[in-house]
Amino acid sequence: MIKKVWKFSFQMLIIIVIYQLGNQIAQFFQLKVPGNVIGIVILFVLLWMGVIKTEQIEMAAGWLLKHLGFFFIPISVGLMTLGDILVNKGLYILFILMVSAFIGLLAAGKATQSVIMKKEKAEVNYHDHAL
Image (cartoon, rainbow, N blue to C red; front, side, top):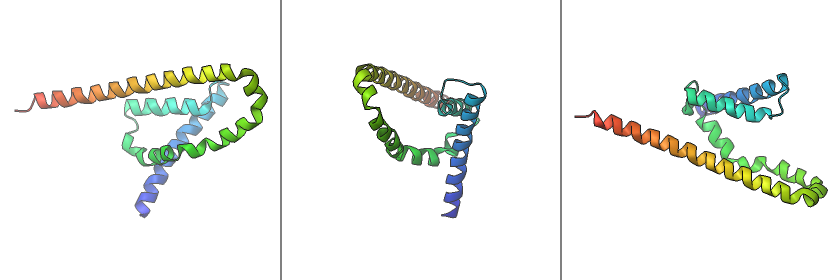
């Protein structure tokens, strides 16, 4: 049990450090991109390059994804104070949300297909060499 707590804590620490690094980069270079987005890009690059293995963050990332809905509660409460903006610009906001959701789904689908194809190709190549 203690080993699991330490493992989870270490994995969460990795994610928090990358998140904070993204925030620091955004602040230092005065970027208009949020630091958490930069952190996600950094995490993606580190995973893609193999610097960080999926197993090294899997438990903490799974926990965060499991409780993702909980993290949107403050955003939902904050929207209640923006009634005038939603009335005046609601259709524009809805359009932007729909387009960005479509782009996100498309990117996730293509990335998933790419990973599956790469895995299937690796499995085929592995079995081709067996006698």
